[in-house]
Length: 192
Image 1: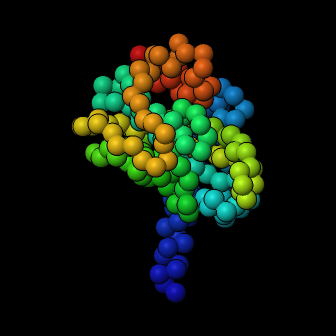
Image 2: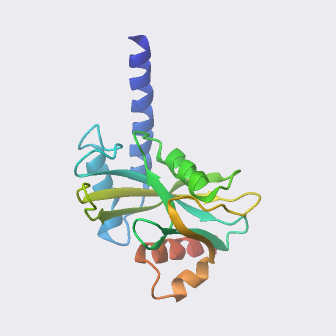
């Protein structure tokens, strides 16, 4: 019984820290990145970190930058068929920085990566129904993750391709996903 109480207390600490981090986030450029939407969702159910939660769930993503900060590693996502940042489901883990790091390592094959707090970007986006899985919302919390050594990646089964892209090139390409362009602008403003 003591282990359950300790585990719950630890979970509450992690969730309280996440809530505080969301409260420190500035309002997003778009409604999909409004921290208030994320805070409301956090308080809506104890299941928000689980993918089986019907309305949606939290995900953790990595803006995975090269050691020099000039390039970002993108995945040509197998299921969505688009170039996106690395990331994935929390699967019950309320430490979304840890989720972003784990997903970056699993999807890139890179190790020695480092998360750079605080939260870098927020993006709520709709995932359409696929097969038996109904449509749902992803409340994506994004962190800067930096490669610190070898930048040779290994393709995982989740990707059709991986590629290091110059951050500035993302802004110049009108076909770049809007949220990637937003993160590129943020990154360049932060680095400049």
